[in-house]
Structures are given as C-alpha cells and as structure tokens.
Amino acid sequence: MNKANHPDYQSQLSETRQYWDEESASFDQQPDHGLHDPKIRAAWLKLLESWLPPTPSQVLDMGCGTGSLSLLLAGLGHQVTGIDLSPKMIAQAQAKAAANGQQITFRIMDAAFPQFPLQDFDVLTCRHMLWALADTSQVLQRWVALLKPGGRLILIEGYWHNGGGLHAEEILKALPSTLKDISVHNLSNQPALWGDQVSDERYAIVLKTSSR
Image 1 (cartoon, helix red, strand yellow):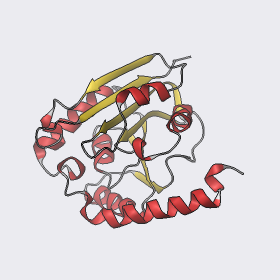
Image 2 (cartoon, rainbow, N blue to C red):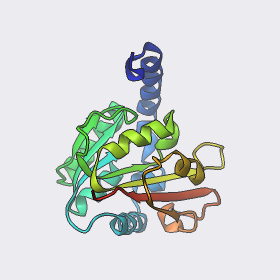
Image 3 (cartoon, rainbow, N blue to C red):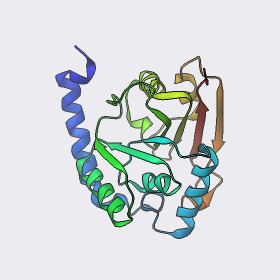
Image 4 (cartoon, rainbow, N blue to C red):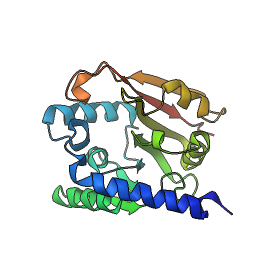
C-alpha cells in the first residue's frame, strides 16, 4: 500500500489539516506571513525576483498558506499554482487573489505527495513548510521530479529558537545527489524580511536542475 493511502498516514494528515485550519484565522498576523507592511512586502518581492527566471514561468507554491507569496509571484508576471493541506488557508488565499485581481490556481493538496505530471513546472517554491514533512529526502525527490529541465527549486526554511525547523545542512544532505547547482543564502541578517532583527537560523536554498 502506498504510504499516502495508509490509514495511519491519513489519520495524521487529518489532524494536521485541522491544526492549520484552526491557525488560519490568525496566521497573517505574523509580519512575514501577512506581508501587510509595504516594506516587508517589498523585501520579499525583491528577494523572490532575484531567484526567479527573468521570463514568465509556471510556478508551484508548495504549502502556500494564505497565499501571500503566491500573490507576489503572480505580481511578477508568473503563472502560479498554490497548494496547501488546509481548506481554510486556501479559502483565504482565493479571497486575496480575487481582491487583488490575480489569476492564481489554488488547490487543497498534500505537498508530500503532490498530484501533478512530472516535469510540469519551471519553478517550485516552499517557505517554512518542508520541515513539517516526514521523509525529507523522498519529498525532495518528488518535488525535483516535477521540475522541467533547467527548473528551479527555492526552499526558504529555518531552525528556530523553539527547536522546530531544519538546519540548512540537513536539507543539503537530503537533496538528490545528482543536483550540483546549489546555493545557500543567509536570511537571518535581513530584518526587513521579518519585521525585526532575528537571532535564529533562517536561510534559503536555491537549486537548478540540469538543462538536459
């Protein structure tokens, strides 16, 4: 039996969905979640733009939450699909997109087992969600398989003061060994992204797949 269909996994998934549904009402109160502050929003926009292809691309936003990054990606001219396990998060994301006149596809989906054709996207983004998934290396293999040749995977993660998260080295070790074009970017020293100074580990890992 595929793990995704195992009763124990489905039970855990249901509990996780309920948790994030309950968190959805207050989720955007965090400065880097809601991006209500124009300065914080501009900082994230500049950062994403520096990593994305220069021409419009098909982008999959993994664990999109309330859609804040999805809207930034669409605003840069990309065709965006956002997925999240929480129906209430997705409902907020859809409402945001409609209010901003953005054409974004949002779907309720388990990011650990994304249901898309292989090599379907130019870019995959994920912010602060990979750490919450089991079997990191297997998840990353599935994600990389969704990228077209020359595609990009942008992982924004951290290891926080409460003990949650992943160290950058853990993700680097979990990436498929065939990937060579990988860069790590320190985000702890960029308070404009978070609304204040931070002392924990925050970073981005950006990789490109082979063009062949």
